[in-house]
Amino acid sequence: MSEATSPHLPEGTGENIGIVDTDRPCVRCMHNLRGVATAGKCPACGTDVAISLTNMLLQYASKEYIGTVRSGLSIILNWILISILLAFCAIGWRYIFARAGYVLDEIAIAVLGLLTTGMIIHGYFKLTAAEEGYSEPPEKHAAFRTPAMSRKIVRVAVAVQGVIAALQFVFILFVVGKIDARTEFIVTISMAVVVLILMMVQMIAVMRCIEWLALRVPDHYIIKRARRYPWQLPMVAIFGLLLLGLGPLLALVMYWNLLDRLRKHLKSILKTGVPAQLKGMTANAASAVETAKA
Ligand SMILES: [Zn+2]
Image 1 (spheres, rainbow, N blue to C red):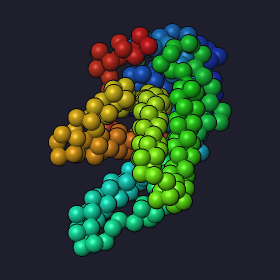
Image 2: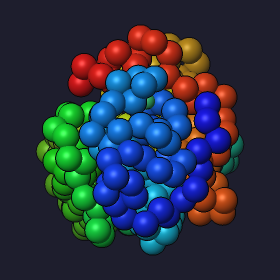
Image 3: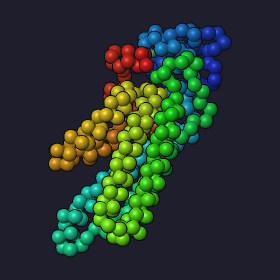
């Protein structure tokens, strides 16, 4: 790994003479490109040098953008902690107080649900914020293209979940108890199924956005996981149910750790101008080839 880290270089560095004349890391492997032709390829991994000369790396992105994404991540991470805490409270309540005759207040749960949904919408909208002044790399590599569609999908998915949470609130407050139990059951289950499908779609799109941000650190530990979590996390959640019902918790912890690792990089970039130095960031040969093919 090179020490190439002088952030916020003037635009067009080295363009005039056709040679990179400052310390500038390759976006894929961090190899120092000083002295390499701007029209050439990285001597270490073969990525076009032109891509590395754009503001592709997050350390060259605007502080406002990094700050927005970082606060989005923080909101989502806090939401996960609150959700886990609430779930344990609800389980505890059922086991301890229900025996003493205190029934869990459905309306209180609905209000909390509505509040926490507001929180995730806010968090995901910040995470997928548009980046002012970002220009696409000149070469058409799929791996380096902005995941614009994924950002939209994330936003639509969380917004629809917000609408459903509001509907559930109205349903629990005004409808439950006034219609027959069978209709009530069907409506409740249908809303749950729709939310589950939305969450799966959202997971795929969020992971594409996370992969994109990690590619710009670059941190291959995150990239690898972002590629397999869309199918791995649901598997862990479902099959983990057999393990004392801890599957969903385990999947949430894995998700939390991945987002937290990205947040560490953004914090470090805001503080020192460069990403955090964490274990396993560099690509192994297999994943570098995979990225090159994309
Ligand atoms: Zn390289």
